[in-house]
Length: 113
Ligand code: 5GP
Ligand code: ZN
Image 1 (cartoon, helix red, strand yellow):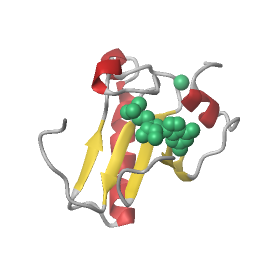
Image 2 (cartoon, rainbow, N blue to C red; image 1 turned 135 degrees about the horizontal axis):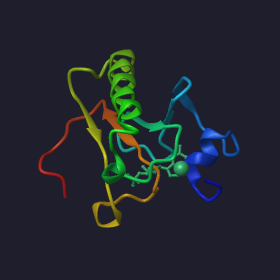
Image 3 (spheres, protein in one colour; image 1 turned 90 degrees about the vertical axis):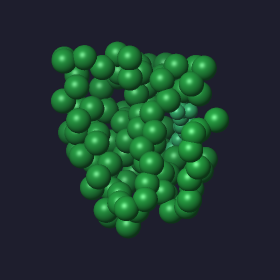
Image 4 (cartoon, rainbow, N blue to C red; image 1 turned 180 degrees about the horizontal axis):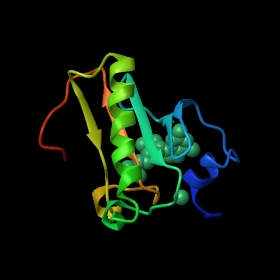
């Protein structure tokens, strides 16, 4: 999608600091990190939000979690990390292209605000 920020990052039109890439998934460091490790993991195909996941696209979502596990181990945060998805504007989704935040390297609180 031409007007989607993360599609433009996938296309290379906007630079990103990549952490992982293959044919279907891209991971890159968040521009405004909330922890020592803050990586965004996205399907390359445009899926707007988690509510749009269905049997036609769930394989790439599963792959996003495989990549999250790989990167968590690579960054040494596999024992204490958080994988977050915000779905919808009131849930603080600001980029309408499905993404999972992999966050670690600090303590967390629960519940989220
Ligand atoms: P959301 O609020 O939609 O769950 O998360 C969007 C995330 O994308 C935010 O954490 C924000 O810092 C990050 N972000 C927004 N624009 C850019 C950008 O151009 N490059 C990178 N690397 N991250 C971005
Ligand atoms: Zn997109």
